[in-house]
Image 1: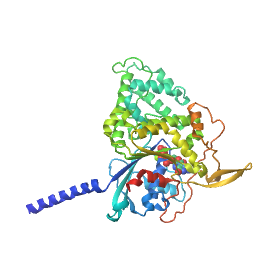
Image 2: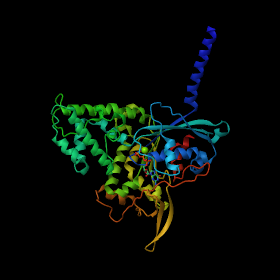
Image 3: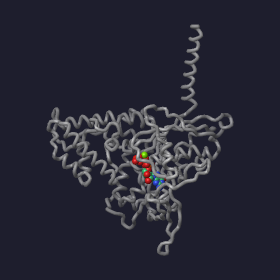
Image 4: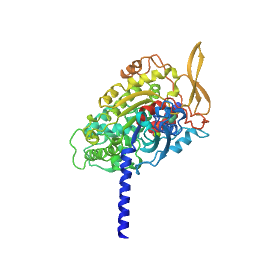
Length: 470
Ligand SMILES: Nc1nc2c(ncn2[C@@H]2O[C@H](COP(=O)(O)OP(=O)(O)OP(=O)(O)O)[C@@H](O)[C@H]2O)c(=O)[nH]1
Ligand SMILES: [Mg+2]
């Protein structure tokens, strides 16, 4: 009796070792990070990518699919039990249901696991059966990457820099009046701290809505269950003296440090450090429409985001990563279905120029990078329309109010520096062009069996990000 139950537990022990061993050796996991600033198209991208990987009729650019090596793709329970699951089914229902609409804004980390059964390519393909490859997709806000820059800063340096940057912004007026009226050397009292933090958070929200991208600390915009806690109850103040004990200054500085150690570091440790492949989504057309300042501001935010991928710059992050790095980074201009395909190349060129300095730094760290323009969910069709005797390349779609419209967004320049130079030089408006932007609703779809939702170059994006591992 005793012997058999002992033997049983030994066998089971061996079995479970076998499981982890096979997982580690034969079932590779790719962790794909998806990020971008607010409204850049992360949720639509992940939803359409998953739908198009499950039904691959529109994915000829994915080589393993083209070669007929993918036997099956299925959704699985994700490995991390404490991270919310990406709400794929509801987002897909929103996009492809009878009343198609865009999914709601999402502002937190979420995750989904997709598993592939695929035959290996090349010499091994005839010898080996299909193997399993897991793809873990992690969605997180780009603003959280911007927080990395806070790690190097003291509260005093951060305050000075932030106050200087926002002085000229009308959205900051109310907060600045309050900050200037406060005496940082005064004894700390909670209502004052709360009022300042609230005014600062209101400024950040207004700034983001006005199109500014440098809206950190990122968690002020999306507090989740940290709302109202001390790590989010601080604000920059005009401090120039010492910080007396029990003063407002001292307490604000303490909370700033707590934000760094209890909010920023855990994100990098638990999520960022484990990513193998990364896509950074950029709503370049939206920024161009808003004007030169928005474009310049976005260029700077992109460079800051990307410095997270060059860990040498931050000693703490380098120690955390221990030489591990993101292997591939894709910069994708989203919503390209707002442009006739004649202009896609130009959008890609703008994208490439927009991220050039940032990208050079990332390749310096060894990551393979590329840029493309794509649409996760194509909401328009193309048509040529005669206007004042000229044929204009237009797109047609359903507007949010249900009406149909054809739309010509303006001609992007051949040379991207025409746009980016004006933006860098602080131009107020575009010199000889106007760029329109229209919000189209997702189109009503009737999908053939085996087809995912329509897209533009989503298959090319997938090939770059994961194709080599299938
Ligand atoms: N035409 C078109 N519009 C798109 C596409 N992808 C996103 N959009 C538009 O961009 C908006 C934002 O897309 P989301 O995927 O929700 O963006 P997000 O980055 O998840 O946004 P947050 O969760 O708010 O940070 C959508 O509501 C659509 O209006 C696309 O492929 N084509
Ligand atoms: Mg989202």
